[in-house]
Length: 510
Image (cartoon, rainbow, N blue to C red):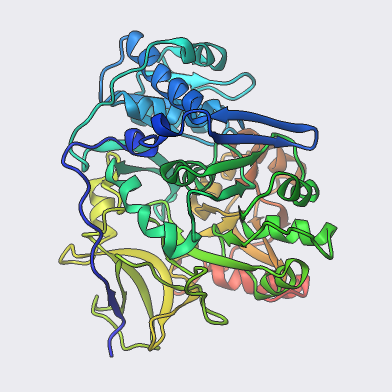
């Protein structure tokens, strides 16, 4: 039996469609029901569905009033505040194309993005690096004032047209803007039962910041699409306080990256969470030990998902179909996926290969902005399958086991980071010499980005370079000067050899 899974496809979205209109379709009927609660130990700030819709559509009106027209890009430089999803959905409602970016990015990083995208507007919060670009800047305070404006009309059109862009580290070594269509939100319906087990009555708490795309999709837009309540911890709330907030605000589902689960368990051996039904995990592989400790502490399961910026999640465990021990989960209903060998053909079940998503998937990206060749390179020769770069095996009954990355991409707290991007930034340090970035596992449940260099630069000089040029999550945590970088027979840096040697020095498994 070959490693191919196909289930009945999701019905097509309406011919005239808008992502934001779909997310807020239930808002008029729900009115004063809680859409969002921003949680702190001292209480919660509540947003009703009526207020959320007014803020989103008012934001669209305000942006259009500044002369923007449908199709214009809007670069979002906002922090961990509700203005982030308001700006994102408000732009889409008006037919504009928002580009969410991490608040941790440095001025040089966002300047390169702005040069590539030519945004018509930058929406920026105080203290967040802005690009050196002539686009006008709208402050967060001005955006907040748009809530009182008349609502914009939803810009309806073909579901396949561009809705938003999100940056991801590509195998080329430079961040790439992933183009997503309005239909991306329609495709997320496959996750509602294929991963979340989400219903209108749920109160889903996401541990991430507002300005993270994992939070934006799983923590906000998906609950709102169903009329559920989204719970988001306020800025500065530590992991040790999350169980208290879950209990106090009756969270029924909790979503986080594996690192947050580890931090919670570090502070709490037993957790009394009577309303919690289960947890969700994505961003990086969830260690089995963390899953077992959470089960013992709470009596609930964690359901894991595998996905990427180009297609969100498509393989997952779910309350109705938990993943077998050691596996990530199953292809979600409506997905068509395969495990392909070197020649691009499906391998037998049980054999390892590259996980691929069929081009017909409604959640699949439109391509990389301004990079048609790189887009084409991610598909099989016949254009039928998108190659994720993840090495997996499909069991006879369809469960997917994750085997690792086909390339050298690193994972830092749930963010995929290209070693080439880190190396390009660090090579600019005087005296760096040759540099190589790798992911090093420092203990069974944690890994970090590490950097080796061959030049006379000091570690302090290298750290200063990283702090000036790289977002914090991309910054190496381990540093090692070495005489020369290991290379393979083709003269390329042998990152695997470097990882193995470094891990052995640390007494850890590579």
